Amino acid sequence: MTVDHCEVLIVGAGPTGLIAAHLLGRAGIRTHLVERRSSASTHPRATMVNVRTAEILRDLELLGPAQEVGTSLEASGRVSFHTTLVGAELGEIDMVGDAEKLMRTVSASPVLPLICPQNELQTLLLRELCNYPSVSVESGVEITDLIVDPDGVGAVRADNSALRASYVVLAEGIHGRLRERVGITVQACAPLGTMLDIHFTADLGSAVAGKESALYWVINDDIQGVLITVSPQRGTWLLELTGIDVDPSAMPDTSECERLVRMAIGAADIDLTIESVRTWAMGTTAVDRWSDVHQRVFVAGDAAHSFPPTGGFGMNTGIQDAHNLAWKLHGVLRGWSSPRLLNTYEAERRPVADFNAERSVHNAVAMDEFFTSARSLIGSGNGSGPQISDAAALAVGIERQRPHFDFYGQARGFVYRTDEDNPQPVVADVVDYHPSVLVGAVAPHLWLEEDGRRTAVADLTNGAFALLTSVEAAPEWQDSFGAWASVLGDIPLRIWPVSPIPRPDALHDFRDDAIGVFGLSDAAAVVVRPDGHIGAILPGADPHGELARYLNSILGEKAVTA
Image 1 (cartoon, rainbow, N blue to C red):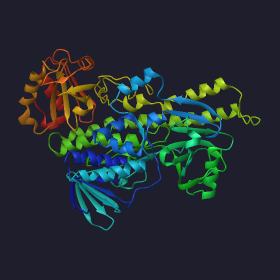
Image 2: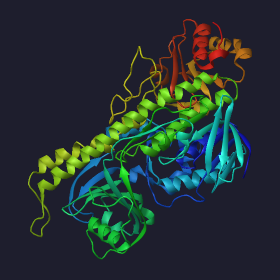
Image 3: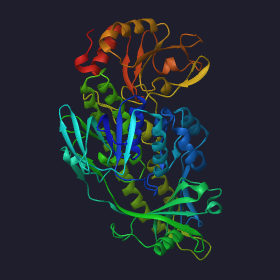
Image 4: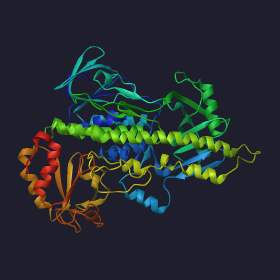
């Protein structure tokens, strides 16, 4: 569908661009998505959907479809290390852990992570866009230029037809060329090495039965790399090799790819089919700024940052960029916020992307060092299996890789912090997640009841602000918000009273923990933003003034006066 005017133009139909389209479409924003390719790649790239991204999919009612084409983490909740897939297992990292850790994980979120390859996720995201009448899509069309002015952006298609948008989201990927057209400069670090991805199908059910893993790392004298679970029920796998001498611009032929896969599996007679192959340089990129000088064009996903796949944060970080940006564009376009709110996009997201980049590089270097040391500990043996010269050292080396794979604290525990006088680490603990009521943190997950139905704290936002307070204090907060109604316009904010006993006018804190966790004693309140992060902790001494000051931070020149 060709259009000549929209509120938001999204360039790029990868996961980042598609999630942005879903979020804007749900808000009723007239959005046009343009993708230069006519069809999505069938090569699985990213496969891990971490817990925070799974929560976003749940919010958009897309988690069920993703689970249908994906693999649950319960079915592959560990990372294992082998000489070959059918050979000796050298060790494992169990991401589920003991019963106590499992209970902490289950109670920390309404969802669990899952494995869902990027190509499958893109397909379902594109298909489900039809649910939003305000979203239109053009595929097989390239945007060749952007002309920005203070009032909007003109976009030029390859056929020289023009399109006008109030705002543009560039989700064009790492190789996009439009960023530089609006004054955004890409900065690339030296590559860490060359990667070879081989997408293949094979029935490996008997080889992995009883030792199901998300990742099977292979360590032997011939190759080093990982067999990645893509969709074992369909026999779909990815072999990713590092430390190989290959020209990034050249593709190995089918016979060579088959040989490498069989070496990793450890069975020369395995029946397999090579589906696709790609080579690429592993490294990091960043940009000098996340928007043009007029703040009309914003970069997100790989257009803003890219990093090694070690940790699986590339696709997830991009989706979470879109989640942060979409509600802010909604506020500005619908007039309940000043454009000043858009300043917070880069301020909040860049530190998270930088942290994920640093950790990904750290993981890549640590894994390469582990391969080197592990090979020195593993001998070929005498036909009875590998001979390990120091099993304890090997076990220690494997356990040191835990933050690479067991990163719940990094996935859900990141904090947006823009207050220089009160600095907070982006991530306090990579492995363990510690729920906390802290401005900028993802709101702790708790179950409440509304009219006898279970509802999560995350369900209270649904694209809006949620103010949680005790049932006794709710009338005063409601009066405070109502007093500003004529000034605020249509700011989407709802007061949610919480009660330890069932009441028709309140959420039932049936486990008796929400009031304590969120500190809702006396007249205190906590505001959860549309993206699920805590926006404000309000003591309740002066509800009228406290709410006004928080809304002032959002509304800019539309500010209310206490």
